[in-house]
Image (tube, rainbow, N blue to C red):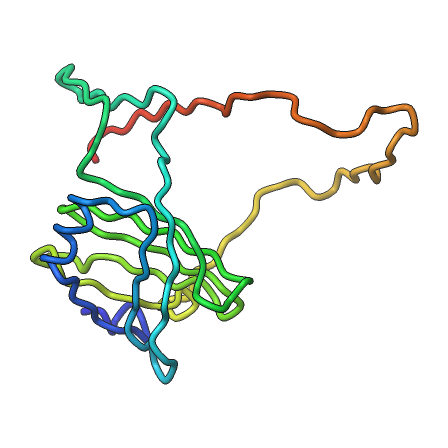
Length: 174
């Protein structure tokens, strides 16, 4: 079924005991090795732990239950080893692991296979999707934008706020 939607891919199984240790210890730094894709060599990722749900994050379910902290999920960001033009983001949980690895070759995605038993994943470059993923921007480009001109009397740019924007998501039927 995968070959009907992706032309080149690698099937991956995640070591469940290593995942359990990762979720329990949540180390500040990890190295993850992804298997070779197509004719490329295995990819080493250098990742550091991040808290993407800080500043009072609360999950509220439709039946009114609230969860202030989701300890069973850990998020990491980083780079491909020796590739300073790369960016990597991974989220690990007992339910699912997902990742995005971007570099000059494209955007590689690690995602769980549909109807999998929790440890079967597919690793692919999104340019290999069938049909090819296309995006159509609906921005009106008829309005011209004036070029930026810095005013000499403006103060130097600096920090204007110490707080990040808070987000609110409402999700139905998900």
